[in-house]
Figure (cartoon, rainbow, N blue to C red):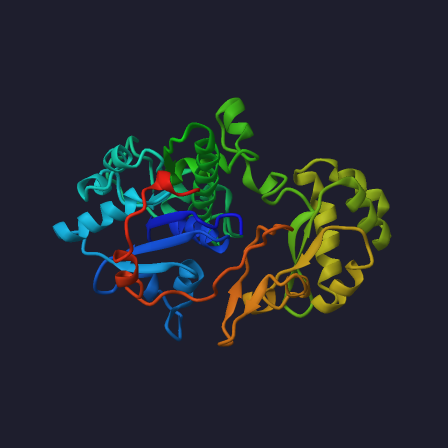
Length: 378
């Protein structure tokens, strides 16, 4: 696998950091997850539970080694510094300054291990305007304006279904780690990576921030191309109380569907978003309400357009495309897993679909001899 021989110390909890380190583990890295004594990572206890731990934790903990260290003790801090000094990568998601107080800040680790690639993920960055302030995904979605663009039919902000700030910061962290490792092959030195969840989500607004950049005003959300102003980027009800979406605004898709419905003359209304598209929306609303979702899925499949059913999660994980591509995996214990997304033709991932028990690898890891990073190939 691509990352065999890479050693990672994971000091992160919940989603952003573990999302990053799970990707590393899936492709062969040895990931040592450091947990506190007692209950360990809080993610272990986020319901629903599934045999050994929670589904949340096994999705974020698979293939890793669990080491329990009491960082309030001198011994625990010494053991952690030792692990950090023999690692290629360290990922932490403490509030700014906490890792340094535990004796494993970047300066302390890089002094002994100049090859370390050290990634800190925090809500607002290490030197931002809100030092020490905590925040989870929803607060950052609010602060970046994402919630102001995510409105329900009542016009009020709606809570998105996935924590996109968490996921974006994890992905940016992963990219940063891999770039730093690539550069280390030339320089022999690692680097420090400062990932702000606030900035990661703001950067994800590149396609919607135009009006704010141009004239400093908020767009009229319901009239924008991707938030309600286009008949061909919209949710429609069907006769059985289900929903489908149209999700392709290119004129070829518009003409294909309206032509098949016998209304090709309405196509010019769809060249740009706005209230003038109302006749097309009303036509599509009345049309899709006439028959059940299954009928429309079969009929739309005969046309070259972008569409999809609004699936429940149980339906989503049974999607024929995901099943055919092996994106949903069932292990020998009958538990379902999400397979790695990155697929290499050569050296494909070989994820271990098992999460560690709390402290399962403490003795094994701590009794191993210290091998400095420079003595190993990354």
